[in-house]
Structures are given as C-alpha cells and as structure tokens.
Image (cartoon, rainbow, N blue to C red; front, side, top):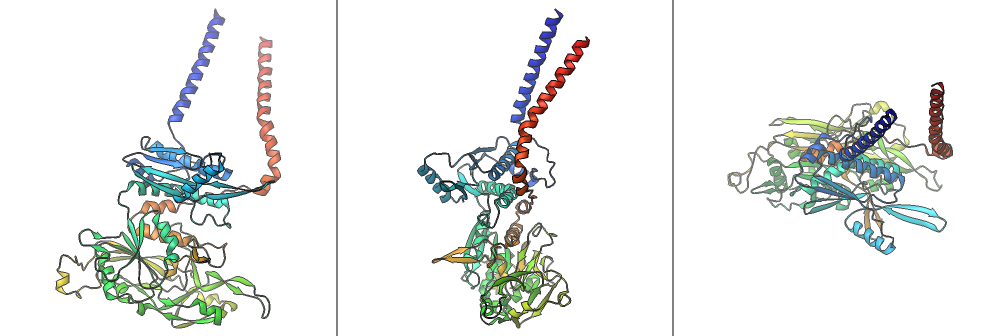
Length: 580
C-alpha cells in the first residue's frame, strides 16, 4: 500500500510539474517583459515613445520584410525589430500588430521580380548581396524595410540610411546604424501615419545659391518627418502667412542665397517670424571661387553680406555675421598634387584650413551626440543686444586652433606647403552658429504706413509671438555634392566628401535634422536620433582560426556533461541502496 501511495504521489508530482511548466510557458508567451542590463540601454524604450504608443487611438499594423533565408547580419536586425515591436505591444497590446513576410518566398523568378519591383515603386530600397558560386555570381535582394498602416493610411519605411549602399561602408556598420536609428525610425513612422495634418518645411529660393540637387539629401531626410517643398516668394505678401490661420509652414530654410533679397521679401519673412514662424538661416557672407584655385592656385575672398541685404534684419534679431573668413587647423582635406614637376600627377589629401571640421560640444539638445561637421569658408558670428528679451545660445564653434581673417583677402593654395604655426592660430573657439529664442522686434517697426499697419487683412505685428531661429554662417553645411552620369545629376549623401569616398561627415545631416526638429518642437525625435550603440564586432581572423575548435566543443561538451552527470547519479544511487 505504501508503495502504491508513493507511486501515486510521484505521478501526481510529475503531472503537477508538467502543468506548472505548461502554465508558465503559456503566461510567458502572452506576457512580455525584460530587464535591460546593457551599458548603452539598447533594450530600453524611451519614455516619449512609450507615451506616444499609449495615446494611439486605433491599431497600428507593421508589415516587416525581414523573413526567410537571411544572412546572419540581417537576422540580428530582424531580431532587433521583433524585440522593439514586442516592447510596443507590451505597452499597448490592443493597438500594436505586426507580421514578418518574405518578399522572396515565391519560387518563380518572374513573380519574385514583380514583387521586388512593386516594393521598389513604393520607395523601399533593396540591399544587394552578391555571392560567388561555382556557377558564377548569384545576386540576392534583402529589403530592410517595413510598411506601417493606420486606418486608411499607409507609409513605407527604409531601415537603412541613404548612404548605406556605399561600398566603403561595411554591412556590420550599416546594420548597427539601422539598430541605433530603429526606435527613432519606427516612432517617426507612427507619427507620420497617425497625424492627419503633418508639419511642413519650405526651402525658400529665388536668390541664386544652392541648386535643388544640392539640398536633395536634406530634403529627402526631412520628408521622412514633414511635408517638404520649395517656394519662391516673388514678393507675394501672403506667401508665408495665411490671413486667418497664420504661418503656412512650420519652418522655413533659407539656404545660401547669393543675390539681393528685396525689402518686400524681407517684409514677408519678417512678418512670418512675427506670427511665430521658425527660420533656419544658412548664410554665406564670403564669396570664394574654388575653381580659380585649380587654375591659378590663388583667388580672392570677397565680402558678400551687403549684397544680400540682410545685415539690418539679422542685427534687429540679435546677431551679426562678420565680413571675415575663418582658418582652422582642425580642417577637412582637399586633393593636392604632390608630385614633382614633370612627373605624373599624384593627388593626396591635405588639410585645408578654410574647411573647418566642427566637433560639436553636445552642450545643447541640437548638438548632443552629433558627429563631425564640415564647413566651407565660414565667418564668425557676434551676438548683440536687442529691444526685446532674446535668449542667445552659441551652438557651434570652431576648434581653439582657429583664427579669423578680414576680407577682402587672398586665398592661396600654396599655404598647404607651409608648416602652420600653432601659436598663430591659438586664439579661442569662434562661434559659427547661434540659436535665438524669444519675442523678436520687427525690422519694420515704425516704418509701415497706417493703411497697412492697421488693416486687419495684413495682420501686421511689431512684436513676434514666442518663436525661435537658428543662424549659421555657412550655407554649405546643408549642401550635398553630386556627380554626373550621362545627362543626369546623381546626388551624394549629405556629409559625403566630394573627393575622398571613404571620408564621411555624418554630423552635417544630423545637425540640419536636429535644428529643424528643435525649431518645430519635435524634441523626442532628436533624442532618439542621437542614440549610439557600441558596435561589438567579432574578430573575423580569430573566428576563422578557432571555429573548428569551438564547433567540437559545442558538439562534444553538452552530451559529455549529461553522460558524466548520469554516471555520477547512477554511482551515488547504487552506493546509497547498496548500503541500505
């Protein structure tokens, strides 16, 4: 009897253990939780993201195109996406749904091609993987992309940045950058798909300066968050301010004007600011012809400020861009022929003091975790007193080994052959970008006739609503270079060097995006974009050298442990019952 009871008790214990295990497995499959012990908190969702997820009114559905036979690097990216979406679903279980699909699932090559073409038409960029086999080179397409749907709206998102197809960038780096940007990318997509009236940004044009192809990358990057367009004011009074609703655009960008801005257009911009509009001023106050250097090795830096007709306007708002040119020992290189006379040309990178490389301090939200920024012929900026209280914050400065040279002045390429004297440059960091916040006084105060000032149609204001603007003394900070392919212009990513393909200044794009985010008030996007993850790569040489040993260990060691434990258990059991 005792044995039967003991046996029933043991069976009951076994059944109870199995039931408990099944119950725990079921609960764990329904509940999602995690403890983030990583140094960079890569698995912790930002509070602002969490708040956005909680406020969702309806279901957001994600279709992720990372499924199937993926390379190991993309498996990591898929795992990161799955982890993030699971985290979102834990916050709002009824509002987040997702599905992972394989765009290469169809065995028929023709059907697969149709699927690829459809995805590419929607703006999703494939990553091409080329593998050499005995039959030749095989191409495989992976789409690191997703589609976000909300009610009747749908948008398509690329997880890789615009420069990820650069062959000089390792796939590991592209994957890591995608993981760094992942929460930012997905949150931005959620905001775009759930907001009925997206915020808008306009590039003002009509005064020469940068071509549209030269602001292409910035415009495309901004279009992932806002509606972006180009506008020529043409002295139309209501170009920027609606007579009823106020500013038509949430922010405007004035990028490197080269010709005079008329007083009428200044009035339009001024009243846009008075009604709370935000402005990103990217201005060149010095004109230098780089083409002359390639021919004669010398050119002249000429002041351009008076021709732009903006001095009085900027002065009124609290800044002055000086008619000088900065030289900095912390500089970007240009290609210089270092071969002897008569020999075959040999171009090598040589630092060019007129192209400062700015390393942002990170003391402001705009520059936090922003990478290196490349400038071209910038000038210094002074802050000055104003009739109203304006908070002025210097957000970008040169290195401490820099100096300002008055213009007109000679720009001589032969300066690269001279060893620079650090003592001649040892001044102090020079300001090149300033943030202005507050209530601005109109440039046209006491200058407008009563017929306009008192006419409600014009909505004239002498003191602005609380607003902000950013002034940068270099219009090229937003410029991307481009190459020519037949008759077409192909833009480079913003920050890619014109001459050296392995040099990339990612801070240019980051700064422009952060500046616009800050002006418009999208502070949560800035924080997420600045997220950095440490790239912990395996030593590939060591992997190849020791992979056989580790395979043997992984195959032999686990069963060996089980066998040893079984023998020990059998030994002690035998010993116990032998004594008994």
